[in-house]
Amino acid sequence: MAAHKVAHATLKGGPSVVKEIVMGATLGLFAGGLWKMHHWNEQRKTKAFYDLLEKGEISVVVAEE
Image 1 (spheres, one colour):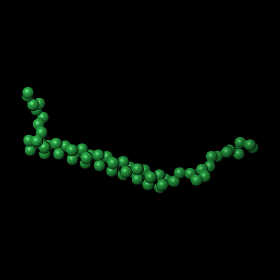
Image 2 (cartoon, helix red, strand yellow; image 1 turned 90 degrees about the vertical axis):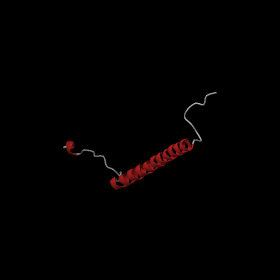
Image 3 (spheres, helix red, strand yellow; image 1 turned 60 degrees about the vertical axis):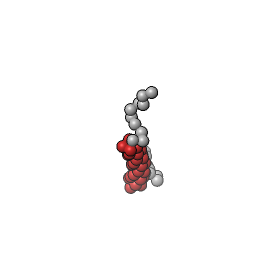
Image 4 (tube, helix red, strand yellow; image 1 turned 120 degrees about the vertical axis):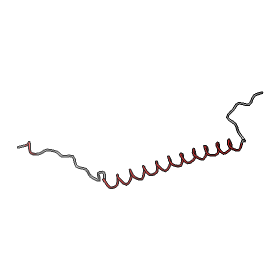
């Protein structure tokens, strides 16, 4: 009856579902925050460009010589 003695893998100190969910959410929020900061920076640059364009300080037309 040696067939009844099957070795089973046991997890000692295995992964915690709650811990992984918290870590995933934290990493997701961090990455989302970085993406949002990048978006705000690009938005600021675009607004500054259009403000200068509206004031006439810059032009998108090549100056003739």
